[in-house]
Image 1 (spheres, one colour):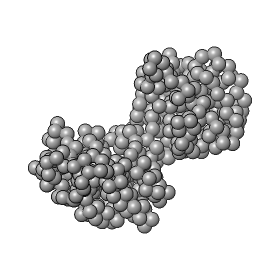
Image 2: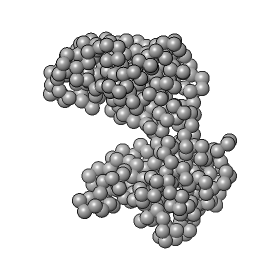
Image 3: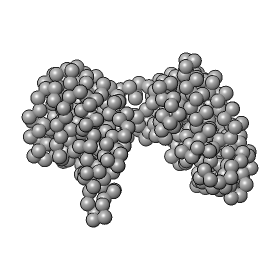
Length: 402
């Protein structure tokens, strides 16, 4: 990051989209904690901070009268936690644009912090509206993008706003730089063998990612609901397991492309199945290709767990995106948690491990192993897109032709 922040009013796009309790108190402060190094760095340079963020999707969750639920989605709710973590008072503007925001930003002295109200109270934010972005830009003299989880979206406060600052007055925050540095370890020159573990529900969400990983990985371990589209493509019987009929050919193409590139793709040899999508159904283990009618695969089975863990244990680079079963249900969490344990063990023996956002982060946190892996991404969708394209719109908007 630059070190020319002295006397600047630095407009920082943070990701304070944190979960709140029923009493509107922060229940998980991870995203605020991740922002602190950037915020403290800027403040220590002798600048003032104007923070802007979204919180939830308020325009999609109107009350019964069609009005925004301002109390529920107000960023004012996070001020007690933010003040505690920053160790200084935080001013608040009840809108992110308008007279009050302008006046409070103008009055801000070095070392002071102003938090703007939820950007998504305005539809112009997600539309990437230029006029709205200009109003935000006018509040500060310097722009820092530090919300990696939004880096793949061309929103007003993340993408459009960058055009209103010259190259010497805009920068990437430390969090974003850390995300890119760790992703590039796997994209540029991974230690080998490099194993990618891909789970989740749908093949359709991961096609481009799998295409990219075939070019870089040695092994790809597939689990979760998406694995059954591959099993079906190979002629297996999958009962009521999750299945995307429109992606059978795509699944076969991916398998053939991997073979042509000498990449090993593994599908679960066996599955833990049930006749109900709940903890209350019958449970048994069968071959993944022999799931009976009226039954569904909800986790990888013990043989698959053993095989996957063996491959992970021999890996020097590991990327994990997506759970390997319905880990929210205790009976179908074993595959996901055993793999998490094996990744942590491999990391302790010198492997580099990256957890690629989304449900994988929930799983690693739930397993209690979050501090035993190399890096946990704060942006599920953004990390996927970066792996696919090795660039993101908001990064380009800041770095341009650098």
